[in-house]
Amino acid sequence: MKIIQIQANLIEIPLPKEHHYTWVPGSAVKSIKFTLVKIFTDEGITGVGASHICFGEEVVHSIHNLLTPFLIGKDPLATERHIETIYSARYFGTPLWLVDQALWDIVGKAAGQPLYKLWGGFQDKILAYGAPSEPRSPQEHREIVHHYLEKGFKAIKLRLHNEDPKDDLAIVEAVRDEVGDRMEIMVDANQALLLNSPKPHPIWSYERALMMARELEKLKVYYLEEPLYIYNFKGIARLTQETDIYIAGGEWNGPIHEFKWLLDQGCYDILQPDAMQSDGLFRMRQIAHMAYLENKLFIPHTWGNGLGLVANLQVALSVPNCPFFEYPYDPETLSVEMNQAMIQEPLQVDAEGYLHAPKGPGLGVELNEDFIRRYTLR
Ligand SMILES: [Mg+2]
Image 1: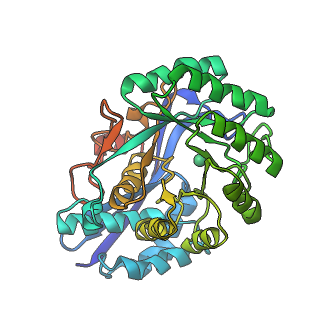
Image 2: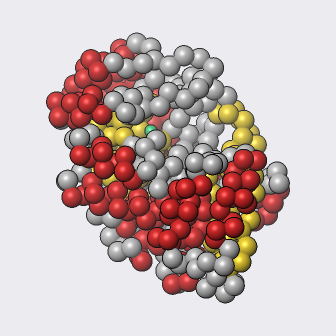
C-alpha cells in the first residue's frame, strides 16, 4: 500500500453559547476549531486525523511542505518509520500528531479491526469521568453535578482555579456533600502550563500544593492533577512521595523522553499524555507500559474534538492500567453533540457510566462529512 495524497483543512464550528475555560481566566470561546487531515492510499483506504491544538494556516503549510514530500509514495502501515518524520517537522512548523492518527486509522481499516483490538484489546469499555470546564461557585457545582449523575457518570473532575485555596476546597466539599459515595471526584489545578489569559492565574507554591493534597485526601478525592509547574520535577516527585492521594499530570509533556524523565525521578502516580500533544498513538502505548512497569496508572488527557477523543479511547482500551477516561462535557455550554460534531455517532456514556469501544475499524468512527463541509474555512 502507498500514500498517494494528503489533504489538510481548517474547520471552525460556531458554538450556540460562549464557552469559558476555568483554566484560562477571562476566556470566552465562541467556536470549536480544528485541523482535519485525510491521507489517501492507492488501495482506496483513507485515514483521518484531527487536532485542536494545531490550528491555523501554519499547520496546513507544515503538513503540505514539511510532511507530504516525505510521506507520498511511502507505506502508511510502516508507522514506526514515520514517527521521526513527524517529530522532526515540529522543529520547523507545528506538532503534527494528527497525521499519525490518520496513518493508524489506515492500519486499522486495512486490518478490518478497531485499533484497540490490534493492540491487545485489554477492555471493551471504560469508566468515563465527566469533565466540565466552566468556572462555578460551590452552590452551582451542587446543581450541575446532578446532570452527570442522571446521565450515569460515576466520576467527575472539578477545576480548582480560585485565588484563595479556601474557595477551591469549598467546591470539592460541596460536591462530596452532594454526591456522597456515588461518585469518584478528581480535581485539576491546571498549574503545569499557565496559558496566556485575559485575567491572571492563581499560582500554586509547593506548600499550597501539599496543603491542598492533604485536604483533598480527607475528602477522598481520587487524584490531584497538575498541582505544580510542568518542569518542577523535584517538587512533583516530593509531592508524589509525601502524599497518599494520586498525583497526576503529563498532558503538556510532549516527547516520550519527557515521560521517562518523569518516571525516573518519581514524578506522578498517573501519567496523562494526549494523542494530539504527545508522540502519537503508539508511543502513548509505550508511555502507558512504562508507567505499568512502575505500578503507575495511565489516564490520557482528551480535551479536544471527537476524533481526538476516539484516538485516545483506542489507546486507553488497549492497555492494562487505564481505569478512567476523560469525557469533555459541560451541560450549559459544551454539549456532547457539539464537542463530537465531526463524527457521525457521538460516543455517549451508558447508564453505568461506561464508554464503549466504537464498532468500526481503525479509529472506529465515520466523519460527519456534510457538517464538516459546511464549516470548512479552506
Ligand atoms: Mg488537565
